[in-house]
Amino acid sequence: MKGNGPAVPLFCVYWTARLAGHAVMKFLDQAKIFLKSGDGGPGCVSFRREKYIEFGGPDGGDGGRGGDIIVEAVPNLNTLIDFRYRQHFKAERGIHGMGANRTGRGGQSITIQVPVGTEILADDHETLLADMTAPGQRVTLCRGGDGGFGNARYKSSTNQAPRKSGPGWPGEERWVWLRLKLIADIGLVGLPNAGKSTLLAAVTRARPRIADYPFTTLHPNLGVATVDDHEVVLADIPGLIEGAHDGAGLGTRFLGHVERCPVLLHLVDGTETDGVDVAEAYRIVRAELDEYGAGLAGKPEVVALTKADALTEDLIADQKSRLEDACGREVAVISSTSGRGLTEVLRALMPAVRAARAETHDPEPDDAAEEAWTP
Image (cartoon, rainbow, N blue to C red; front, side, top):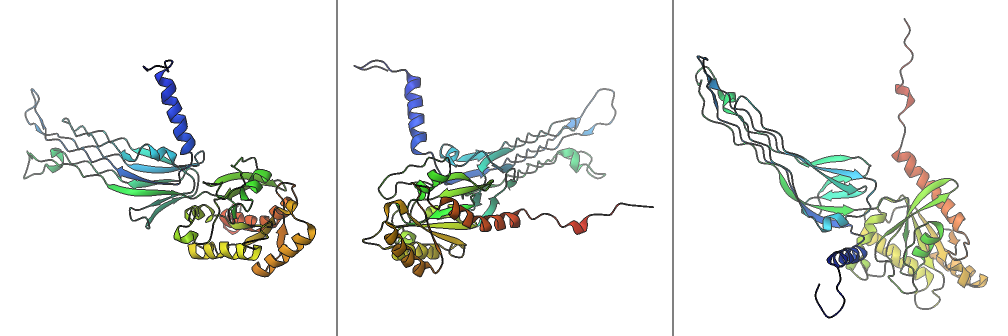
């Protein structure tokens, strides 16, 4: 590069731009892509003509089948960032048939890898085509077209020299939306600055960004915690504010990442002594969950009063009493800084997690087992 300053190698500029781009776009949970399966190859019109063979005849082969578009869920991905740079996927078309009854080669299929938990929606953004919830799950979204017949297929007693062949069937094409919903055991919800990211950092090895201003968390974070020798996955999403269902703040877009969680941990900031009190903070978030729908309002919930290290015992008792009156259940008191109550609140969440896991991995009944055969 030319200029007044020192020369900078081109590859340094390239990788600096790439790394800067990845730093900004490290999480992507929605993408729209175009899919096109391969067309079938046309059949061949050919006749067998060889020396010393008295009768020839049609010997045109069939065309090859077009490639499919297959989507596969893989466990080592957690974002749709790859579809930021490639939105069009087209499978190979089938090869045309050839003489000597040679069938054309089938087109190569394309396998698109997506994270586990990805929903595939039609272009209307509502019709669910597939839900990729298990590692290794594969779905064929666009089937390749069949190859056309060669003229050997049309030979008959009344038409011994057919001169027609099939053109091959066209493949399928469609636009689809990919929407990632992270799969976790426990979803953290609450107002901004309620202590969700601090809790995630305290009980897991995740290192989310933490600061003393609202909306520090701009994208969901996952972490794995160990509770009595059992590993559970926690999902931290950006905070909700009043009117989030109408787009206020960051809106409710990220609530989809806790739809799959069997239990919610609702965190309420205990230091909110002026402005919005703890009871109102709880009602605001519950109202947004009700407006969002998707079954979030009916999920089991554990409510916790956070930042107990910054409160006196009398204030903790007062805030806890107000919050219990608002939610109608026992409230846990925790502090992610000092570690107070963290183990207890995670244990309170485990029954719902175990019940969901038992329902998902329900073993086959033993009644179907056959007894040992005897003569």
